[in-house]
Image 1 (spheres, rainbow, N blue to C red):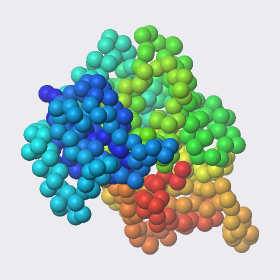
Image 2 (cartoon, rainbow, N blue to C red):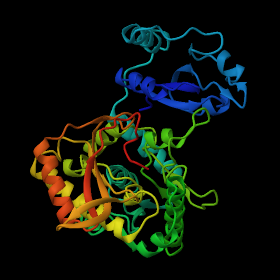
Image 3 (cartoon, rainbow, N blue to C red):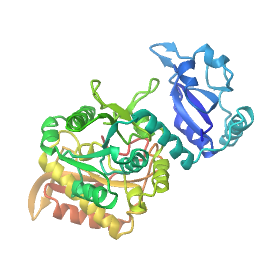
Image 4 (cartoon, rainbow, N blue to C red):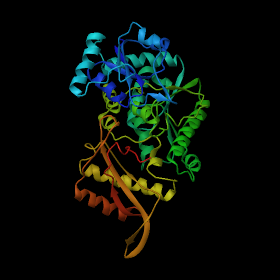
Length: 429
């Protein structure tokens, strides 16, 4: 069944994602597309019932105000122009905005509320089979929520023609790689190839402190490993990634500067020779989890806390050293242990530790120490676009401080990050 959809054309708004989510909450599927989409491209998208031209403060590119093709405005598709040249702004209060939106979606566009995960699955299965044909697909399996759900969806679409590649880049959490391989081979029955590339990645990252460079190096090296593995196999032309919508938004659009280049978006090399399969790229994190449950994945896999694609590289701030990387890994293990004991592992959306590259003076065993701080971060969110801070009990913070400073070599202070998103991002790099 083709789902009705409302397209949002980005003419410089900072609230495209909020608008898309509002439409999806009405039960109608919505996608965001660039302002310069052609009418020909638009007509290739199935089920389009209406278009919203969503203007805003980023409506100028290189000094010129952006617009859409005149053909799109004159096409036989209802158009709602908001905050664009010659258009009215959204009404002031959210209740009135929702009334206007509901009237446009259901009365003007006559769209049906048929956006469901089941319909999404049916549509994506068809798209995957059409794109891949009779070929085989390499699947980038990190073991996180997104790649786990992607694995289930692709196996439903293609069966054993999916070969999952788990690359241990030396930046995984404690015992993470062994557990990922065990779960997906033994419990899910996936065809998993385990590649130990830790030394290779860490050598490439030696001396690199800029977070954008780190992400791009990691993204490029992942692709090189996948390409090498593809050459060992038959009929591999596709690489499947668990890219989701926040990855794309934060990596930047034509009208918005990127917050940071996600390794699977802005970090990809221009000369890669595998075609991407990214069926989750229009979904928010909560929708990915709902998809995983609908596909029959165990809840403990679907609701595990997210782990960034670049791994601990973005939590070992600045140039990575083996000493600080090990400190991040061990402090993270302590944090996860204490959160599980306190029952917070099922309450808090994401929690982790960060070790920066500066040191401070402290006292250990009655002697001066000159060691690193460990920063704890714990956030709650629905879609990863905004996040609030979890208020941790003081006795837990005290226990974490005692354990981390006594059990993790190189750490003499523990700090708690109280910054929401925005102004901070969830990860530090």
